[in-house]
Amino acid sequence: MDDARMYRFSWWRVLSFGAAGVFLWWAIFVGGGWVFLVHVPTFVFVVGLSFLLCLGSFGSDFLRFIPAALRVLAFEPLRAEARWAEIARFASRCVVGCAAVATLVGMVQLLRNMTSPNDIGAGMALSMLPSFYALAISELFLAVVHRAYAAKDGSPMDKTLPVINAVLPLAVGVLMVAFFFVGVLMYVQRA
Image (cartoon, rainbow, N blue to C red; front, side):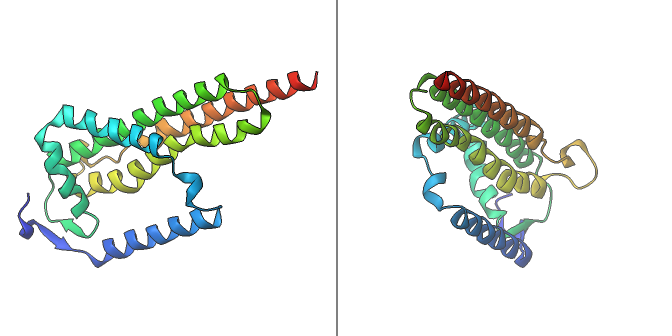
C-alpha cells in the first residue's frame, strides 16, 4: 500500500483539513488563547501511552501505519486497506481510554488538593484537557483515517468509530461529580 500509485491527490481533503485547522485556530484564540489548551505532561501521557499500546499491539505494522495515516491528510487511497482501518480503529479506542484514565487522575488530584476555592477552576480545566486531546485526535484525525481505509461495500469495516459514545458520557459524568464536590466545598466553607 506504500506505492504512490495507490493514492490520488485530493484538493477537497487539503481544503477541508486546512479549513478545519483555521476554524480550530480561530475558536482557540477567540476563547482565550492556546496557552490554556497546552499541558505537556497531559499530552505526553495521552499520546505517549496510546502510542506504546498501539506499538505493543501491532508492532512494526503500527510504525508503517503512521506515514500512511498522515498521507490521508492530502491523498485519497484508491483501495481499501483493512489493516490500516483496523489500526486506526484501535488507536482511536486507545487514545480515548488513555484520556479517560488521565481525566480520572486529574480529578483525583483536584479533589485531593482542594485547599482553596480559587484553585478549583484551574484544576477542573486541567483535568478536562485529556478529553479535549482525545476528541481532537480521535474524531478529527483517526476517524478520517479509518474511513479512508475502510471498505466501502457496507462490510463491518465500513462502520464509523463509536468514540463519541464513550467520551461524552465520561466527560459529563466527571463534570457532574466535580460540580457536586465544588458545591459541597462551597457549602462547608460558608458554614
